[in-house]
Length: 474
Image (tube, rainbow, N blue to C red):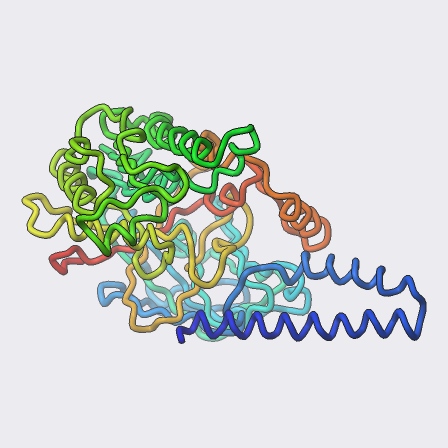
């Protein structure tokens, strides 16, 4: 049993025990006190749960994150003097460094009920990075925008509902400016490219966006318009296919640099398991990808028969890589992002690159989902992005942080707002939960939109991890 499964099992067991105890308290209060007290206690208990205990956090906030960084990362000596973070030796800057500070973070009393955070003060680029309620362990703060302030000895770390302590460690990762290279972003679904890398691809010298699936399933919003299940799924797939080709134009990416491959959502694992076998849509009653590929501005190998097979997907990817000749490929991180289509997207690209005459010099991974924490990045829109929870010390990582100005964040938010899948209203229960958390727990809604991704993705950092290429080169 994996660590995540163990934590999930423990979480569910504890929740059942808590519900049983609560039920006994309610029954006892109704019998021995007054009849209406159980109703009041039930409402108060539900409000408390929604405010403070509804996060999907499948590990203990007191666990240390367990990062092992690539050997090419440079560890520098730093020390805390009060709130000031001081370097033991000056930092040599080239302009594209990623700085990560390892430090112990411990919640104060209110940090179990209000989100604890560290404010980075001392320069024009102030920042705030948020951690789990009840945190008490090793965390990694993103200092990438604070390098000049740090070098001047003016950077201050101020805990909000938490304190920082211990001997900090500063890790410096140097990389070229990937915005000056040809970039291809692999998106398993429409909006994955925007969520993970809008800031990068909107500034790249040349950018390509390749979307693998139409994302046609879970079309209940369109069924409410009176459409049957399959018809609703087809409409949703057509809309998301359009989004995948049209929204990058907002960032200046030409139509000729975008491709929608039209494979079916959550079917990539089945395709990979049987590479020659066509795997149709779960909900759209389709076994032909060409309905969702018809707006592409150029032909691809899979157009010949429209068969949703793994081999066609590989052929499409090879043709696109040879056409674009990207120096940087950006795709889902195979270890950090657990979504099955995201895992298969990375596997497909790596398989397509085997023996191909063109090879990228860099592969960057991103994580739009996590195994253990559905709320990461924690905090509000516009905040910085600290490193996510990682508990596998055998995983070598090289983080790459890209800074976004406020204007770039707003452009990214508008791009997300154009995505049809992020437009429908949230379920009533979720809206009630957010209202309770805003009123009682101090959590602020995103000013850009109701969907949770506006809070999670519109930040002052986009975070990537440099992966080894299929040839084993970092």
